[in-house]
Image (cartoon, rainbow, N blue to C red; front, side):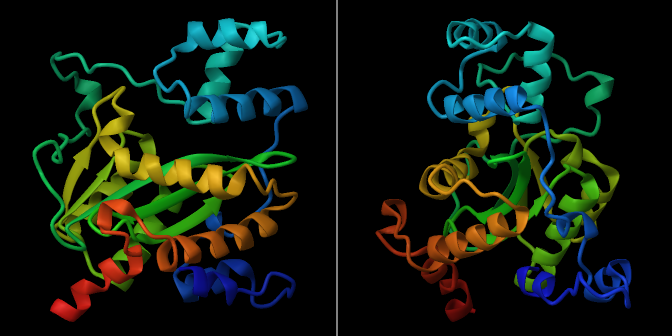
Length: 279
């Protein structure tokens, strides 16, 4: 996906971006690196929330409202709830055992509770996170192989759409082969018909985190922590293009150079590629 994206010419009038994306099989929503904008005050609150999440992911809206007001922010609960949704804050709390309602009919059970990843392309995890910038923000979507910690693919967009996520997932499957299971949260992007049908048509088992259980997808949550603490917070970007180039370099480092204790101090790429040598 990343190589195809760099082939697209955005300055020439013909052929248009729509036609180029169609020919290359790239989702247009992942090409527009214009950051989404909020007021300076809202951006400040969202950056605070993003950093605070790694310290206290168990805080709910009332605790957050209290500490924000102590920090000097003038904010009410309605505004905070909207900014929490925009910044992708997901409070961690014990899942209640209740009957599944009709509105949850598109949700799928969590399949990883007693399952151990033993090989590459057995389990992929997918998720979206909020990326703060100097002026505005963007969303980052990534796919990670749980056995090797290898980042299969990633993409930036200024909106969270099912089309965007489905396009990136489809491209990853075509390039790397289909996994046995894909795990996600219960977000609308992953419960949309287009994404569900993509997985079903490829015979992929669908696993979803329980509501309020962000740590069900712990491995990709750790990836977000690494990305933000090792790159994003240290290198605030002015433009979307600058952010894309920086993340491209970081993910190359993450896959090819950064060792992980959980995989015997090897790199994700080396562990993932054992699949090819064994085949």
